[in-house]
Image (cartoon, rainbow, N blue to C red; front, side, top):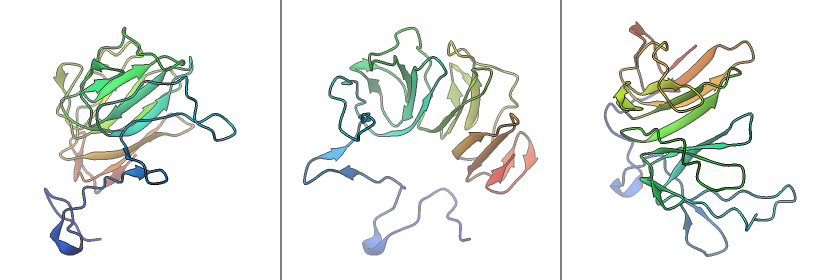
Length: 183
């Protein structure tokens, strides 16, 4: 696998491919928000919350609230730094005010309700966290997760046995050498 340290691969014509893909409907504008569909696949028009830029990941908590991560600075019209939470009806959960210093690429909810976040951030919930961090359900930082990776975390999942698996562009995770994925 070829790696491009510190930058994204170039596409034909010299443009950088940053992994962003815009969703388009039949000729409409690029989608920068999340719009839930009802079970039949139609748009749920009552769900009107959106972000002012790209949404990269979503995770649903056991109580139905929706975690949102991405490259946005506002969610549902209110300032939110790359991370926010919506109530099940789509309204902004104003009790969740945690933010990240840069893009959030992945979110996962553990069985105990803790929230795993990965991305390009170096600060999460106001504290130093290098590319990965864990939050309590209220959004406060859980400092028991070993701090960091040396580069971007793009994917995270919690296995049935509770183990965390992450993928990205790192070579070190929690102070140990790893290559692109670790569990």
